[in-house]
Image (cartoon, rainbow, N blue to C red; front, side):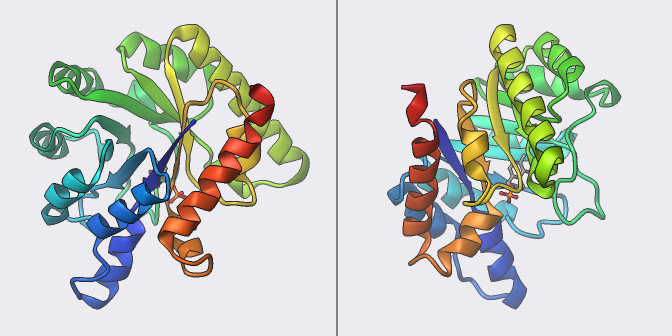
Length: 241
Ligand code: PXP
């Protein structure tokens, strides 16, 4: 299973003081040293964390880059120029603190064109979606390479509700496999809740940001924090052989 480390919040910290540090590209290098298989970053319309001026150095520091953008012409042009390995298309609401839900695939008219242009440029495409079976059918018809299942609800629930959400994620990942869609997951994952998600057999990749960057403060730095997350994920999959 691959670990994608989202470095957005290294830039959040930098931007809080208007200083040039900490540098998200340097964080990408540290994350890779700790075992990150890919680096993820999200360029938002307001550049509240990653800025366009960060992209070249992040690209250079990332063995595999997963670039999150909204389904929008300007962001598409930037992606085509950057040539990341993956683009993950996400919904973006201006007032939200973080990505709040999955894409509503039937409500984004430009989606088909954006997916086609990215794939023509040899960029793999994933769609950030809820673990909803009818959404997966539409994703499959769009011809994307993968979906990233939104784990935010799972992360915010507890007890029986969390168990039910985990079953929804399991069912969705199994359906992805049947449809030939890559299955990724992310949002709200922490060292305390990552193992149940990591143990879902069909999931190939987890993208984790905020908690890893926060844990880096208390777990001996970013490289060590990434190592701890990767070890925890792999431990959760030991029973899969
Ligand atoms: N995946 C996607 C598509 C996201 O938008 C985000 C948040 O930027 C993440 C994963 C990472 O979420 P978190 O920072 O809560 O780990």
